[in-house]
Length: 265
Image (cartoon, rainbow, N blue to C red; front, side, top):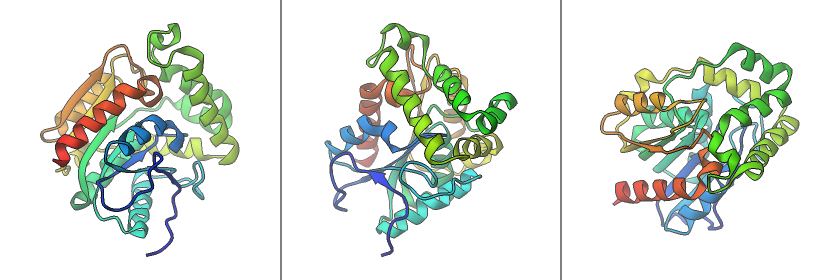
């Protein structure tokens, strides 16, 4: 067994190989820390967890990939290095595209699939795409602002206002400093991807989770993704935005645990 290339958080429980494994894939410009609550929740309830840093993110070596499929290949290679054959995989936003790619192209290795804040294809505003290259710190502020629902800013969620914005913005800023160019690479990869055909090849039980007030991947995109995948379950969180891991940490944790446990059984 070779040394795993990707860094991963395990939710406080070192994977032993005796429990089902869940791989959590972050979105564009993010890293493993955004899955903190979900990783701990799942690890405490019978799952081995790998909340990975994609190449060129967090503590994983770069460079960042320029195609969704390349990220998917990197995740599969990392699982090979760890000696893990079969996993549940959940991804957020760009990470959902990566998870979809893995589930469609390596269907024998995926027990079940979670797509969060997802769309089969995402149109990226050209001004935002250029901004991630030319003024990434400014672009990051816009992404974080759009990524949270208005309700979150007035204290109507589990993790209201400044803390929620602050933790996500801190992640983006840290990534921009540590991995220059990664935010633009991620958004370019996202803009170029279309998973419409791949969705037809997914055989794993699938849940698609959207936020009712998501401005980046509106619910209609999540509903379309669920409709394209045979037998998929669709869940919508009321008054929630795009950054569901930090905006609705406990609700998302419970939803993933319930679905993965039911499918695994």
